[in-house]
Image (cartoon, rainbow, N blue to C red; front, side):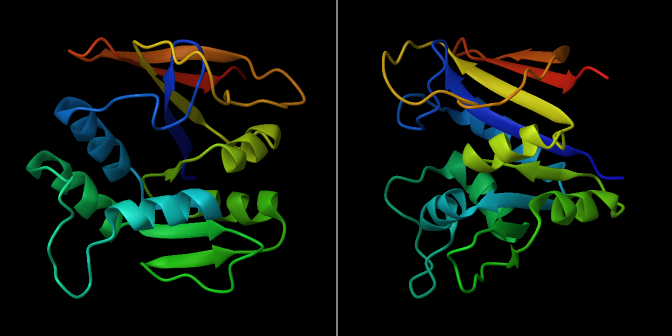
Length: 186
C-alpha cells in the first residue's frame, strides 16, 4: 500500500499563502527530494493550474522564465516529469502527464493508495482538508517559516474533528525554517 504524504509551507502564525513564505536553494532541494519519494502527485484544480503555470517548461522556446534560477531547475524537472492526478469537477481535460480523478474522492484515492509503489504526494489546501476528513493522509509535513504574516488563510480551517499527530521527523534549515513531519496517531 502506498502512503499518502502531504507537505506545505506555513508561517509561524499559520498562514499558508505561498507569497507569505520564502524559499531558498536548500528548501528547493528538500522539496525536490520529497517529490522524488512519490510515484505520483495528487492536485486539486487550483494547485494543478498554479504548478503548471510556474513549472511546466515553455513549449515553443524551451527557455526558462527569467525568475527561475539554476537551483530551481531540478524541482521544475521533477514536477514536470511526475505522474499527476487532478481532482476537479470543473476541468474537462488535463495534460502535462496528468489524469482527472472523478467520482467518489475517498474511493478514488483509496484505490490509488492500494497500488504498489513508493507513495503519493498531495499538495494544496482544499484537497488535503477533504483527505484529512476522510483519514487518508498518512504523513503530514509542515515547513514552518520563521515569519509572522499577520494575515491570510490558515490550514485546515473547517476541519470537523481533531486529528491527533505524533512527531516522526524534524529538519532544520539554515534559513531558520523547520520541517516537521507527523503521522496520525493510531
